Length: 247
Image (cartoon, rainbow, N blue to C red; front, side, top):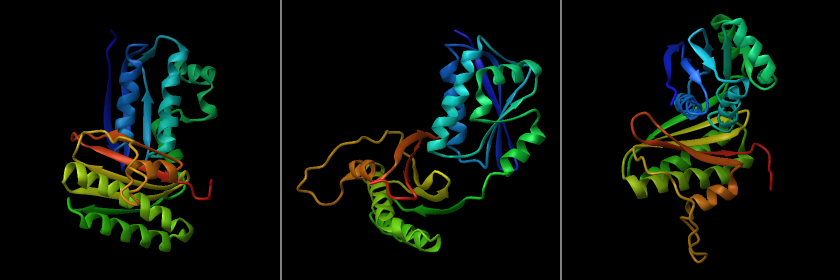
């Protein structure tokens, strides 16, 4: 089994991730999951430095960055920039065709400039108690941002999704949580961070129950949804509403 590690630093709110070791079939999931966990922190950008300490078993292994980019484009939708610091890495990236989908830069300064060119995003962060009143606060926050951001056509769905995410967390963890509502290129994102490591499950409630339909309702309303573990042992459950009707 091949070892690979990822060193991270903070740069003006951006995460700079520097992998070291050999990327092959055994280390592929390690690098993938490490980068996805960094993205789950919702930094301003994720900059991946490919320097002399990083090598690949084959050019095909570089598809790990496409996989990470595709996952992040659903959520958290943070900008990703590959920093190819050697001629070999630049050659391999071009050969793999990564530059067609992922922003690339020759050095860290150029990468920061690319990341800063991304459009500004609006967000609202709200700390919630571990009680039933949390759902009321979440719905009110969703209503306020839809009105403030000229998204009144999404108000109904946003209220339902916010309520279901929060009620599900309160039901299973009874602990404080944090709701983040963000307007992105990919849509209106609602993400709830709580202290429970248990993954959410998609189970349908009886049709006779008109409310508390859980993630079944989230799955119906949203363009995409999912969850990601956090470094403190908890998780983030996220959902993205399309900015334009898809139904």
